[in-house]
Image 1: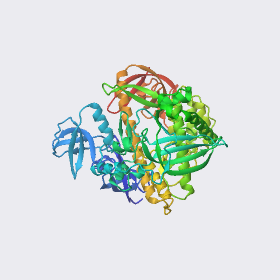
Image 2: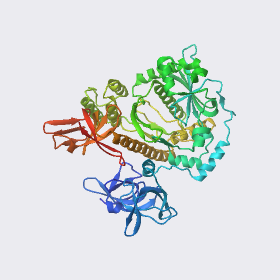
Image 3: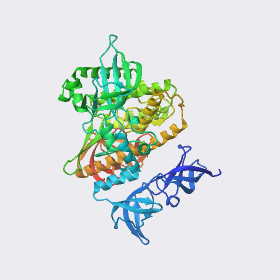
Image 4: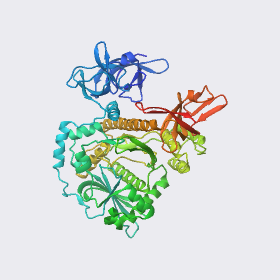
Amino acid sequence: MAAIEIEGLVSVHLRGFGFVTELADPGRSAFVAPPELNRFLAGDRVRCFFQESDDGRFTAAGLTLVGRSRRVLYGVVVSHRQGLFLKVDREVSNTDWALDPGPVEAKVGDAVLAAFHGDSLVVDEVLQGADAQAVARVLARYAIASQFAQAAVDDVARALATPHALGARRDLRAIPTVTIDAASTRDIDDAISVIAADKEGALRLLVSIADVSAFVPEGSALDDEARARATSVYLAGRVIPMFPEALSSSWLSLLPDAERACLTCELRIDPEGQVTSIDVYESLIRSWARLTYVETAAYLDRGEVSAAMEPVRAVLPWFRTVSARLKLARARRGGVEVSRDETRVVFDPSTGTASAIEADKPTSAHVLIERCMVVANEAIAQWLVARGVPGVFRVHDAPSPERVAELGEFARNFGIEPGFSARLSPLALAAFDQQITGLPSEPALRSVFLRTLGPARYTVNPSQHYGLAAPLYLHFTSPIRRYADLVVHRIVRRYLHGERAMTPGDASIEALCVHINERARAAARAETDRRRSLTAAYMATRTGEVFEARVTRVRSFGLWVQLDTTLVEGSIAWEGLAGGPWEADEAHGVARAEGAVWAIGDALRVRVASVDVGAGRVEFAVA
């Protein structure tokens, strides 16, 4: 077949080769041999030729740089005969890059950040300390900006000069309103109010969201910066916000006793949990109390009323009511709730190092807020579609019959008989979710379960969110930290202000969705890398200790296991397993040797054998 010319994005593999993914068809990519890749960085936009081989695979050749969004590189200074070079993170480049002289002096062995100034690569900063180097590596690897451009900083003053005025907004300041977050949360963008049931038993839930769009004009330098970032990034121990902290943690944040401009989604919910009406409007609110998840759960579970709750004590019982009604409605249609166990890194306040790794379990308060946010997101999606205007929808496809069969096989390895048919309906999914809830193997099985279901994505084309069993869904409730939500806010406000010229399926919004998806994936990978690095540093202090674990993946190099208590993950190489040689069947999650089998779900005791903190890898051995 003749070679075809395409434009695509470069990705780099640790082994030195790479791929080009076609922009026009993201499902098609081509292999790039190491010599062809030497002049390029991960994320580079290139023009090249795709040549298809007889087996249907593509090879890329003749790469020409079209654009480079990556301006900062992390690496270690090395010396070659030609002078000083930067040994770049091998997930970003497969070769060393020549360094030009600059104002910052660096010597061989220094870990540095270097920036492109025209065609020259110059050292910007010499990094001191292992943790500073680890954070810089993650940010540079995924092209996450930690500083704001000066033009964006200048725009902050203009945003701060815009008052939270009532104007034509609906005045909700007299309605008891609360925010519920973690005690450490600084960017508070959602608040809830519950108005007591009427004579028909229907209560009203008001979900009020910070109206970022009223303070950040579209196309401003501040907006351009937020659009480029697309999301805040939550690295353990550090937040890289989408907006400068003067806005995200102060002027836009729904702080207690402060008047704040919001967009409010008001829902009438009947005694059976059905949403019978949706009203969306601009509002001015005042948070009566800032509550934490811990104290709210103490009230929901045990009736304990904290001092912070006294101003809203009368409405607290309605929190239980709304949570129960929304649970009932969700249960009728199936799907799964989002809240699940996660790993939390605990830091030593005196040293700043990881002192513990804990499984962080969601509370009844987490579940309450999740249900309120999910129902508001669904309502806004329905509201937009009913009016024939575009949106940034959150879509999650149903698993294929092959994926359903895989999940069933994996579940049986855990001792669960799911009884799936080829099509896994949302109700069947909910039934399976109930089967695994509370089991000792739940965390490991849930990680396999969610991986099988696959990720959701943003698109301008409305469709189902399978995991939530929602016919329509989007993100509306976090515009301080997600650009997708801010886009939705702007569309809602345009409609409220009388604009009717918007077109469903807008191609420009779909192009924006592609960008948001890419940056959201990068942020998620950065957060994972940071967590793995900290986890590895902590596990290095536990070398030789024995833990209970379960197999969660079978890979070509060995088993992937997860500890039962802390959910820490690591590998066991085939050489470290008795019996061999092992034949790995990754698709079915099974490895076989003569007279022996390892499968996803198998329980085992493991010993911490070795740790690579820089790579974030923990290696176990069977105890």
